[in-house]
Image (cartoon, rainbow, N blue to C red):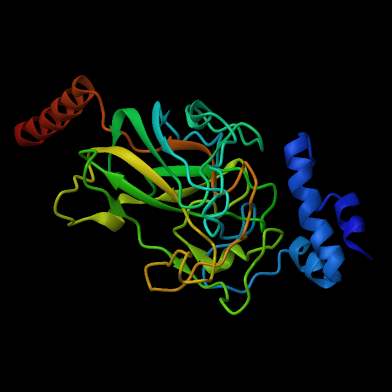
Length: 295
């Protein structure tokens, strides 16, 4: 059986847009060209080997769906700094797919309603009210991958003053002996704390507990979230490294207008309450204590 069989059987998501169809066709044409029928089968069979949680929908996955009721708000403004479509080419044009406002509001889970950052490009997003450190995950970032294994990653940083940013630690266990090219696949169980770990419609969540005790950061009043494209080259002259110093190997190069991380949205799970709401909570706690004392 060849790769076309798996496409026909619906292993991959149904393709509804020209751009999505183009990306899917590139992926499977590459598999067929190289004779990687077994690799295509492994992709469809969800065969994973790393230390971290698997793809969305698999047992133990930490992916959060865009329609989850945990989300209370979405990004309302964005500052965009595009990167080149190929950082190794000094004359490379900047990525230009999508407009900045496509990353605002609720995630769409589509291939086309996104803004592409380009190699090492970044997007800094703000919100109507600050994100706060609550129980569990506090916010999530959505990318537009059409499958569980064709993944493009980004670092995530936060700030409580718009000037000083602090990065979440990340780990990539993907091999670095052979470059994953622009058609390649990545095992999500090799990835920890990089945005883009899951397919479109599912967010990668982040917990502010991980950034406690950093001078200059108030984890209970996060005003800015910065998403920075990972350059997936294993060439140290260009590529990005995780928090352990490992090169992060992901599809490279992708010399298209949609190069780099494709940002769909940033959803807020824990948000600083309105002053009136906070006062009501305080009043409720106070009344409860007074009742206990009276009894």
